[in-house]
Length: 111
Picture (cartoon, rainbow, N blue to C red):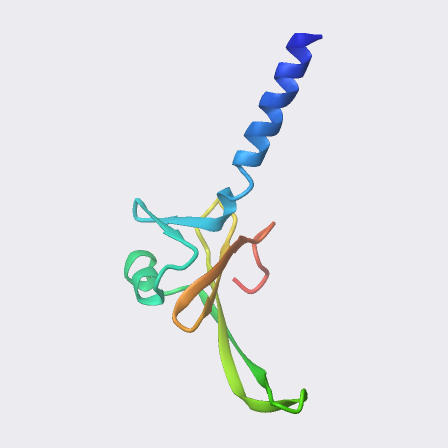
């Protein structure tokens, strides 16, 4: 009984430790993490295979409790095709910083 409890606790600990493992990308032997500067990513990883640029309307609160249109924010998704046998990486870049790193479950059809 004790061995099963210890094994279960060990498995939970290992699983929890890998929860944030997808939040980084390795390029030329260095890790790119969330919060990295976009220029640093380009310097280490090169140009992405595809960029998707999106304009999002931004609203701001006013004293009356309503919101008003304040302009547009530009967000980018950079797709890096990492080669055979590796999932493509998608970096979400906003205001010159990496906000999120995801991996596509299969090779994208556009490449």
